[in-house]
Image (cartoon, rainbow, N blue to C red; front, side, top):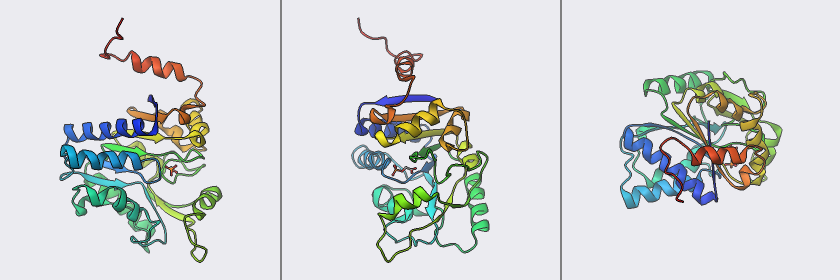
Length: 262
Ligand code: PGA
């Protein structure tokens, strides 16, 4: 597990975009796993910039999103379909038929989730999975207690998550209480994981995920089980790490890293 502490949110976003660009340079038809939330917005802005200004090409890329609220239509401003369109998909050249986001309106959740898993397999598996982390340590909507072997399924959201989301919905709307989410087991099958976290309010969850035990109570701790995961943090999100200097030392002394000037 590689822990990289960036000075600012912007630095973290640029660094994350570099990882995605590297993946596409190596494999133009890469399968990307994408996340929603406020954290990856800067990453997506940087990808759009690279697409426009540097010709970063998504024409052969396939995408799979982590999750979607149950009960929201694709055009609902709080749906993750809408989020992805607004923040990334409308501004890059991924063919629409290559975009996969769990359905918020399917009536047959079990069949849909089985299809989603099958589709990931058919496309050759996810090469690089982008992840955020919740204040409760969740990845995707794998709330505390989610099995570390879980697969794509319908999940009841934690009370705190529902409360946190309520501010985005008007009074006459029902705040979703279910989501379809990739499971922790699904996520762990991606070839590479890249988790982003920004801000002081994530510091505790980040510290538990990286330095605490592997536990279904903090599903992000499952990254400790993955052979190729990178965690990109800004300074405030790294604020509660005990081994912070160690992570920096490792970064400065990676094999092949340029020697510091004397
Ligand atoms: P955020 O959400 O990026 O909006 O903080 C992250 C998450 O809950 O996974």
